[in-house]
Image (tube, rainbow, N blue to C red; front, side, top):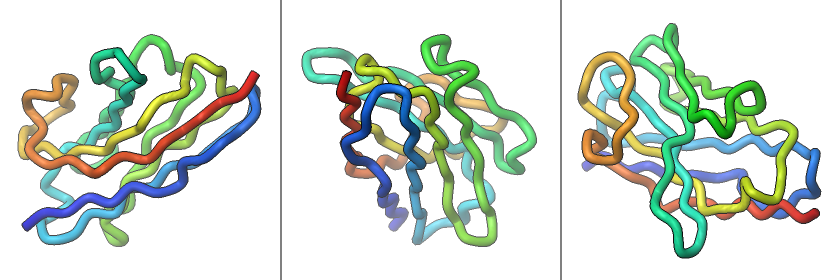
Length: 124
């Protein structure tokens, strides 16, 4: 059974940075496309970032481009999300997810496995 566990969330002031981690167990990590999504109260889950099997390809949602960076370590079975220049509108629960598809994955529907989420709160 594939399990994903996020960590690294917390409270930060606007302009600050956080690094989220997502540890994956129970599967072949290097065969999964990985993604990060976020969901604010009352809103739909939003695509944040995705990374290919090898880590050679990445893509981001428009609202985080230039501020967030996704990366992965296929030895440590972990995916990261470095978040810089945080703003109050980045406040949300952040979820990592794993997809068996190839390439990059943008839709929640193609992700088979999800973590429980970690809360990020940005104060103004």
